[in-house]
Image (tube, rainbow, N blue to C red; front, side, top):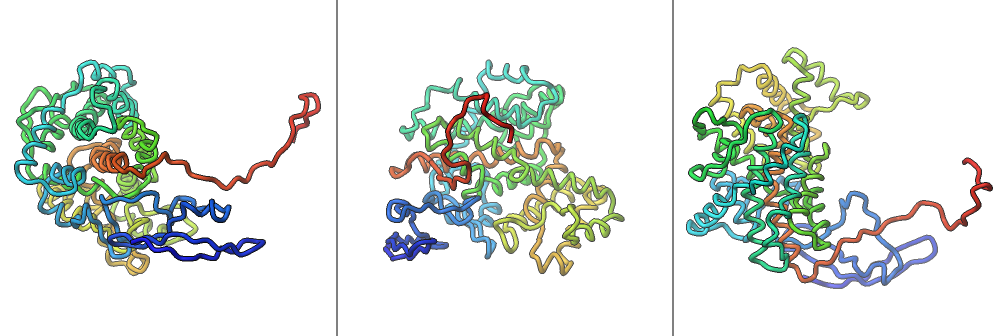
Length: 435
């Protein structure tokens, strides 16, 4: 619903009156449409981090951080994680509704037959050092997809966009697994069409050519759930990066690569790896009280990683699901007595009972548990962000598709508050002095 209201803006010299639209969404906060703000007042809005600015209209994901709610296309994340597979969620995010069995079968068939990489593309891996970070390799190879699959790059064609989405969903697990295999000097495991999406990835990632890989159903379901929980999270930094890159008309592979680059930043995609590093720093259950005291000391730089969330001011709804999955995996593998996991569970218990953490609402978040689960599955910590990217790629491509489909979309061009030098004239080099 659009209504117009008058707003009085005070500056140093006068009160400026402007009339701006007041817009209501289907749920959540209302917004003031400030697109005409500069035209009417000569003023821009300043919002570092865009914490109070809506950059787009979207029908994909809704978050209520105060209430701890996360919806994909209106469906609660709890129900999707409990009753759906990752590919069902992929269909939902892309198409807007959960698939029928026939629609799901068709998607599975399409994804299964697009998992292979162009043979020349596999040669890219040999150009990297063996100790290159897997995310560096992933960035380069995903970015190169447009050089090999340029038959469907018309961004204004819905068929081309859908085919690009299928290729991204299908090929990124292969790229992630190959990035890992290359880094440890083992031969690539090629995809197998008789395995499910997650089984296939686990085989490529953890299997070897010398023996038959037999997937553990508990492990498969755990990884499937991790992908679902990370599939989308509204207008986060990497998704906003994908949208901004896409607003210029860049091809989808380039846009997804920009999202991967943003996700690689430790403030965004590195939280679950940071949890494992923290646990290794603490070292032993006997050291927990010491580190808890450090975490409570505002003058101490040490912070407990994996607790609290910028968006969720209550419980992270994904954390409860991930916690149950974590315990299922540890039970299945008999790892409750493993020193690292024992330490994690002890820390979890303290955080859930300690008044300091409860009052500050520093509950364990999804990253705390996902790091533990990935470690238990045998996935090294330097691969955690690549795993995050694999799950989030469907969210990225869904937002990209939504943006390209929007007739009102325009190239992103944020404004700035300039604080540099004003006009000055160039002097001869002999007349310049050191400042």
